[in-house]
Image (cartoon, rainbow, N blue to C red):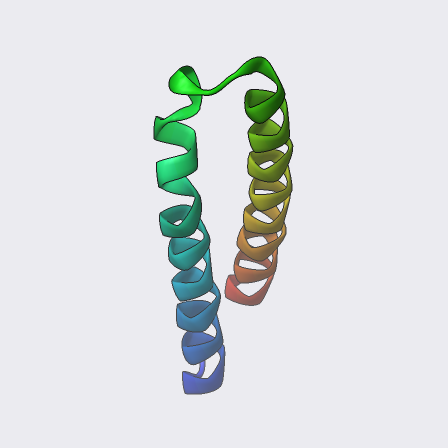
Amino acid sequence: MDDIDSELINLLCTKIGMLMEDHSGQALTLGSMSADERKASLGGLGQASAKIAALVKAALSISE
């Protein structure tokens, strides 16, 4: 793996970590939300999870 691939993987993983950090509070406080808030929050977590999955897939693709 060359330096450019390594750097790109590092950047993708940094973005993954940032998304996880941004949404961790939301996930941890889900139990104290009303039903409507919970539903909206779960939607946001689902979108973040999809982004994370796509970024992981991209990093894996580069590392092959």
